[in-house]
Image (cartoon, rainbow, N blue to C red):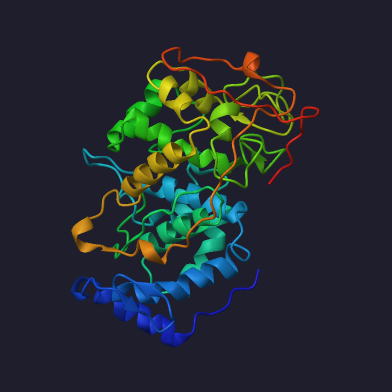
Length: 357
């Protein structure tokens, strides 16, 4: 992949804007690029957005890089504790100190996106934290159905790598996962909301023989299909038999994470999991709010500028999700009996095989 060099004048403007953002008046302005923003400090970000779309996201696609940029933002930010003693949160340490953090077991496979982002980041004057979390917001916006994520500008450079063992893993118990999220300041509902990201996610290293194995049958749209399909009765493993961190999947070519399944069945989280199904607006709003919190963990938000209007507006998802062909409500492993299960139609035809992403 060739990387275009950001013009020097843009880099200079970005550096000047970043150093002066606190003094910038929050008023609507028209940028030299023709974009309109609520704060002049944000003008220098539009060329970076264009650079990301052209050089990282293959012309604004909801592809592997977009999925991975969203994963990277989570893995960067969650290395934090409200009690102290862990990392700096959403500071970009996973990019700035990538040789250290990509060696952590929980970060398996994340070196592909850090390798892709690093040379582009170096063409800009953004801090590592601003770059990682802007890339996540822009990449997510390429996926139809996604909410338009917030972006706060002005994170300082990270001071050190985050420590190991701060990222929940697919083999962890529900109690362990919820405890790690609580230590970072998230409720069980917020933890489930963040897992909406799995609708556009895939596994590369759970089973190394089948990289790019998606978690639902619609990996290029941000919809609640993953919340439905995790509840379906499993039939087989998609690759080389049972691997740590996966359980039987309902569809050929699809992977079901052990952690997703146990969270969908646990009484602490099952009803909120089920509530996401075929509830697009609710899922979007819950994910957007949880991501807004995640992407400023450890940051002094009083010193940041709201540049959310530089993030592209995602295309809507206006359809209804459906059971994959050959499945119906009789195949659902319902764990929440306090709420009615939604009425969902079934795709016609034989059971599909889901291709890798």
